[in-house]
Length: 177
Ligand code: IMP
Ligand code: MG
Image (cartoon, rainbow, N blue to C red):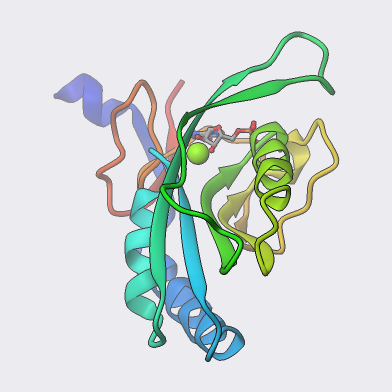
């Protein structure tokens, strides 16, 4: 337990700060997608907490779907491949899609997911990320919205893990490497 606690270096974003941003995101999305078929897509595992909070901050009809991918990226920074391990369970062509992602780091995963989903002709597609680490980007990818921009730190909590642990922290902390 001491070792576990020592790995939580410091809180960088508190529960209250997350709640405030999520609440205003919910209001924004409720206005933007009013009277539109809306499907939130969460990328597992990291995105599940964010999705759970965002949908409860939205006051319009919406649906949810999940997708899980595995990334295989070689040494060449610009090349890469993602394999869909679990796909969205329906045809997305009749929906406006909002992807809810935990964090964008190199940008490779999301860039490819966006390409894959755009090919399925959704009515529209937008990427909202809780966190963005633009200093780490190796491909050209800019999310439509990032709730917080952070420097090059490894973070845990609020869905994000180190070695599959710490996802349950209610705040976002820097991991003590
Ligand atoms: P990338 O943008 O393709 O490099 O990959 C982003 C994914 O890597 C995210 O969806 C996370 O699952 C994971 N990731 C990147 N940075 C962090 C971090 O600081 N903490 C935890 N997971 C991270
Ligand atoms: Mg992720």
